[in-house]
Amino acid sequence: MGRKSLKETRQLEIIKIFYKVAKKEGYENTSIAKIAKVMDINPSLIIHYFQTKEELTYALIDYILDRYLLIYTIKNKEAVTLADLHKVIEMLFSKKWNLLFDDGLFYTFYALAFREKKIKAKYKTILDSLRLALATMIEQCHEKQLIKVPDAKTAADLIFVLVDGAYFYLSLESDKKAYAERLEYYKGKAYFILSGAWTP
Amino acid sequence: MGRKSLKETRQLEIIKIFYKVAKKEGYENTSIAKIAKVMDINPSLIIHYFQTKEELTYALIDYILDRYLLIYTIKNKEAVTLADLHKVIEMLFSKKWNLLFDDGLFYTFYALAFREKKIKAKYKTILDSLRLALATMIEQCHEKQLIKVPDAKTAADLIFVLVDGAYFYLSLESDKKAYAERLEYYKGKAYFILSGAWTP
DNA sequence: AAATTAATTGAACATACATTCAATTTAAAA
DNA sequence: TTTTAAATTGAATGTATGTTCAATTAATTT
Image 1 (cartoon, chains in turn orange, blue, cyan, purple):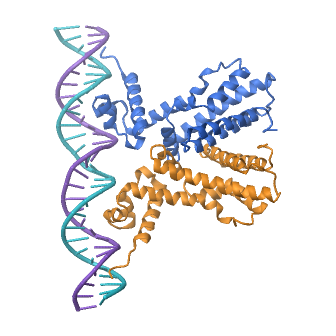
Image 2 (cartoon, rainbow over the protein chains, first blue to last red):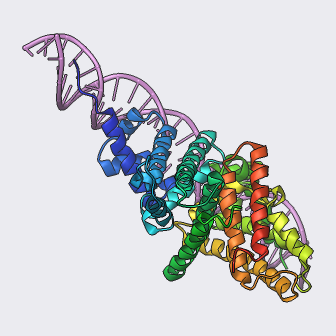
Image 3 (cartoon, each protein chain N blue to C red):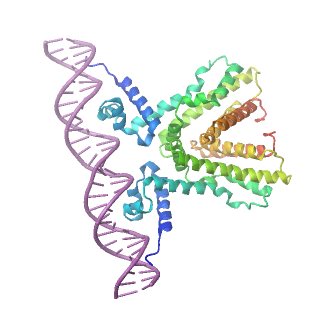
C-alpha cells in the first residue's frame, strides 16, 4: 500500500551532488539551496531526506571516508602474496589513490574533527582500519617468511605516518616533477621499512 | 597634523580576538559581527581596517603561521651545537609546540589552501622555511663532525614528514598515554635519522 | 582657537541561509 | 476505483551575513 520509498536512492543522489558541488566550490560555500538548484528540486526536499544540514554533512563525510578505503579493493584477504603487499604500497604512493577522493574536502572535514567528536571518531576509525589492514598483510607475509618484519603493527603505522606526512607537504607542491620524485623517494622508504631494517 | 594613526595596533587587536573566537567556535562560525561584539566596537570599524573579510582571514593566517615558526626562537644561528639541534627535536615532538598555535585552525586554513592559491603559497613558504632551518642546523653539526649526516636537506625533510604524519594521526588520538608513547617513539626515529642510518 | 586627520558609530542594505508547514502530486496496493 | 503513503512543491519565516555610507567624536598640529 502507498508509494514505493525512494529514500536511499534519493539520499545517495543528493550526497553525490553535494560532493560534486563541494569539490568544486568548497564545503563552506555549498548550501542546501545550491544543491537543490543543481538537482532541479526544491530545497525542502533535501531537508525532508536529511533533517538538518549537519546530518547531510555527516552523510557526505561517510561517503568520502568510504572512498578513502578503496585502496584495498584489490586484496583477497586469505592468501596474501608479496605481490599483493607491493600493490598496496604502489597504490598508497600513487596518484591513483588521490583520484578516489578529493583532498581538499578530506582535509576540510579532518579540520572539522577538531571541534566535532563524531567526525573525529569517524576519521579515527578509518585511519585505524587502514593501518590494521596493512598490518594484517604484513603479518601474513612475515609468517610465510616472504619478508622479515616481526612487528607488523608498528611497521604499518610507520608506513602510514610516512604516507600522511608526505601528502601533507606534497599537496602544497605545484611542481609536478618534484612531486613525483619525492613521492617515489618516500615509497622507497616504505619498502625499506618492509625490509625490516627500520623496526629492529 | 591630525590624529595619530592606530591602524597597526588596532589591526593586531582585531586579529588576536579573531584568533581567540575562531579557536573556540571555529573559523566558519566566526563572523565580523561576533568579533566586533567581543571587542565592544562597531562591525564597520573592522571593515574599516580590513576592507573585506577575505583580507582579515589572510591576516589571521599570517598570524597563525608566524606562531608556527616559533620553535626556532631558541637557536642562535651561527654557532649551532648538538644541544641546540636536540632542543629543536625535543620541541618538535612535544606538546609545547602545539601550544603555540591552534591545530584545528591550522588544519582549517590548510584545507582552504586547496582552493586558494595565496594561502597555499603561504603554507608552502612556512613549511619550506621550517625545513630549511633544520637542514641548516644539521649541516652545521655535520661540518663540525658532531653528527654524520651528509644529506642534511633530505634528513630535515624526512624528519618533518615524520612530524607531520605523526600529528596527523595523533590529533585523532584521545588516549593521552597512547599519544605520549607514540610521540616518544617517533622522536626516537627522528634521532635515528640524525644518526645517519636512514639516509645513506 | 581653528584646522586637520583619523577613529568610531549607527543606520541601512540586499542577500543568502537553514528550516517550517501545509498543500499538492504521484505511484502503488487493496 | 478507492485508499494509502510517500514524493515533491511552494510559500513563508526569522536570522545572520558582509558591506556601504554619511555623520559624529576625538586627538594632534598650526
